[in-house]
Image 1 (cartoon, rainbow, N blue to C red):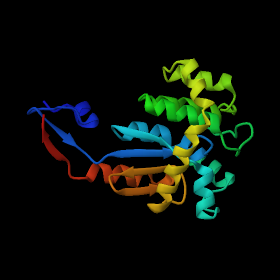
Image 2: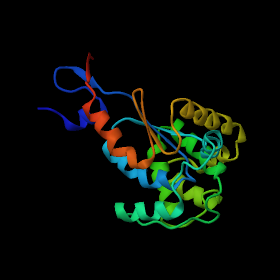
Image 3: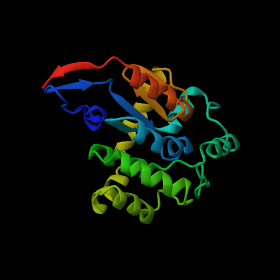
Length: 210
């Protein structure tokens, strides 16, 4: 019997080998509504995703701005996807504390549940993610320790890594977030999630021995 879950996660299946697809990563910023619009589909469509925070401010500055859809277009996109959308407090200000916490969550292998919870709190609930009480809700939903998560949120040394990720994305040809990376292919913007999914499904798997 073929295990669909084994295929999704790249785990050992029939025959003692494993099927490897290209590595997949989602680059995101929690201040970006596109991250909210993309996160649930990414979690559903892909297996083994690396959730990597990248600075939206740096990407915008490096690209000269003007590449993101405006709020009106984002609201229309949310309607087309049948997703509720409200603007959080202080939108579109950066959320440095929340992004540092997201980096910690990703390091702990809890990037997906943290980003899902945080983006819902921001763009469904309208909450400011840099509020420690709101961050505590996202941490709890992701199964993270509150003390460790809040300590990470206050660690400004984490910012440099997220800025570097943004510069790497620009060098790879991205001009907006979120970005899906499937192997060496780069898909910028949440509307490109279907194309990224197709590339991931169609990629020739490599059969490896266990």
